[in-house]
Structure formats: C-alpha cells, structure tokens
Amino acid sequence: MTPSPATTTLAAGIEVPTAFVDEHVDRYRDFHRAPELSSQEHATAAAIETRLGELGVESFRSGGTGVVGLLRNGDGPVVAFRADTDGLPIAEDTGLDYASTATGTLPNGDQAPAMHGCGHDTHIVAALGATAWLAEHRDAWHGTLVLLFQPGEETAWGAKAMVDDGLWDRAPRPEVVLAQHVMPVEAGRFWLREGNMASLADSWRITVRGRQAHGSQPEKSLDPIVAAAAMVLRLQTIVSRELAPTTPAVVTVGTFHAGLKENIIPDVAEFSVNVRTPDEEVRARVLGAIRRIVAGEAAASGLDEPEITEINRFPRLVNDADHTARASAALIRGFGEDAVVAAPLGMGSEDAGWLADAIGVPGVFWAFGAFPPEAFADGAAPAGNHSPQFAPDAELAVVHGTGAALSVLLEYLGV
Image (cartoon, rainbow, N blue to C red):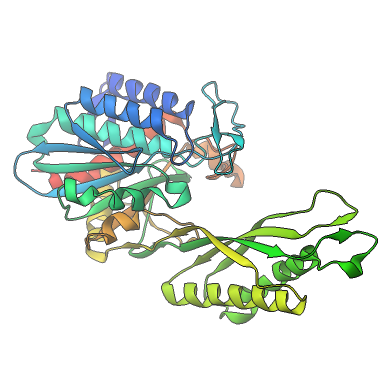
C-alpha cells in the first residue's frame, strides 16, 4: 500500500502523519543549535524532561544531567533504550541555517565552541519520537520502556555516573539494554554485529618533570621536552613491534605542551595518549608497555618517573548473540532484506556497555545511516563523526532513527 501524501513511513507497518515528522525535525534542529558539552547538559536535560512530561511519561534525574523516563503499559517485558545527549568542543562548519554557535567550558576552565558533531541530537530526537509513537499507540505493545537519556558519553563519564547514582535501584531491571548511533552511512542501512561492537579505550595524561635552564646552558638543565619527545616516538613501536599484525590496536598522542619561550628549557612537558584495544588482555599489555617505555625513557634522561593521570576509560561494548539476531531480524522486517550490513570492527569506543554490564544483562548496539544516496555518488563520502562538517540529513535522521528504534523496541514489547 502506498502511503498517502499526508503520511510518512518510519518503518514497515509504522506510518505517522507527516506533521509528526515535521514536528520532530524542528525539535532536532533546536537540539542541534544548542549543544552542551559533557556534564553540562542542563538545558538539554530540562528540555527532555519537559517533553516527557507532555507525553505523560514519569521521569527522574540520574547522574546529574541524565534523565530516566519510565513509560509503563501494563504487564510485560521491561526493555531499556539509551540515547546519549552531550556535544563536542568543535567549531561547527556545516553551513546549516541551524548550525551551532554555542560555547561550553572545558575541564580546565577554558571556553570552547560546542557542536553536536557526533549526532547525539539525532539520538535524543529518535528516542523522543519513538516514545511519542508508543504513548499514542498503547494497543500495539505492552510492558515497560526504560528511557536512558545519558550525559557525558564523549568523556566515558555519563553511563557510569548514572549507575553509581543508583539508576538500577530506581528503574526496573530490563531484560536487555538497547542503543543506537548515527554514522556516515546511507539512510536505510544499519551496521550490526555480534560480539565486540566497539573497542576498549583509555586516555592518559603524562607529565614529565625536568629542570629549567637558559637555552644557552643546556648542561644545567634536565630537558623534559627531549625526554617526552623520545617517549612519543618510542610509543609508536608498541603496535608495530609488540603486537601481532592481526591484533587491532591504536596508540595516539593527541596533545603535547611544553615551555613558554624558545630560549628557555622548561621544567615540565606534558602530553596525552589515547589507546584503543579489542579486549582486556591486549589492553593490559599495551598499557603496561606505555608505563615501561615512559619510565625507561625518563630514566635514560636522568629524570624522575613521570606522573600518569587517567583522563577517561571506556568499557567493553559487546553485542549479545541472541539479542543481536533479534534486533537484526527486526531491522530487516522494518527496512528490507538488504538493510543490515555486518558492521566493521572499528576502533571507536562507547560507554553504553556499562549500563548493561552493571546489572549483568545483555546489550545490543547498532549504527544507522541518515545520509541521502547522492552523498556517496562517484566515490564521495560525507564527513564523519567528530568532524566540523558532520551534518546528517535532518528528516532522514528523524525518520530512520525513530523507525529503527521502534522496529527493535516492538520486537520486544509488541503484542
């Protein structure tokens, strides 16, 4: 049956008035133009609470700026659905008429531009759209939906903060925790795989302390820049010389700061390192190698052992085999036989795994596309997540994000 012009198909068997899509596109644009950095999602959380209240959904705060919604519809399964809410410190360069000009405060107190450069605004609106549909179609499902609007995903802070704040003491225990993420993929396509869906990730700040001297008298110094530079170069040998070529891992030095003037050898150099590993065994091996190299290079330079400070630590994200099969089947029913693609094992990271692991229940995480076919014409590709040009199509994001959420939720909650 061909939908009438007044309706839009979210997924097979799920049609909504076109006004429903328009309303949620407007809501998406509002969230997009007003991103907030991790742990600062105060206005975002308030807007989510307001909308949940309009839909008759009870809610409570968890983890400071996290919002938990409970949509109850009689006896039946309990399912949790996570949508992250934070933006990134990026200056947006999309040219959109609803582009962000917002700013936020970095952990060190500096002001920085803010952008929804990873698509968390699409996740918020897809979850709200699915909630609106379920609230209006109670005859189509039964049970309880636990909505997890999670802050601080970008810093691996939010999921654990919600758990530590007693999330699962106040919300009913779900049989599965579901989550999705927009990616630079064609609309109507979904990435999904059982097993590892994302990498473990660790970020450290390494402070190398030496002795300051005039640039003309290096013999009076203990140069932390030279020592730190040697560390940075040597760290690159961990993946290439200490791991098998078949073992996926990444060691990235993302920042390096030292000195204030070219003719002064400073007393401190500081750099940060980001590590991606596939499992706990490789994680321990790589992190141990970093400690060994940093300490060894410092000793070779006559310096004290550097200080290592953990910035963040992302947990595992493992898709349960049985529930992955259920989610995949639901997406295929909703979007067609070719809709689901075996996800590549990327080195991205996610903290959604904490929400399920904390109570020992399975989880499923999938990626959805929100870009038109022409974005991929002639070998082109749209800008990816964390780019200042990242710009999912607003309508496609709403339709496919909401449709995917409903397709999988109804697999569990549908009558």
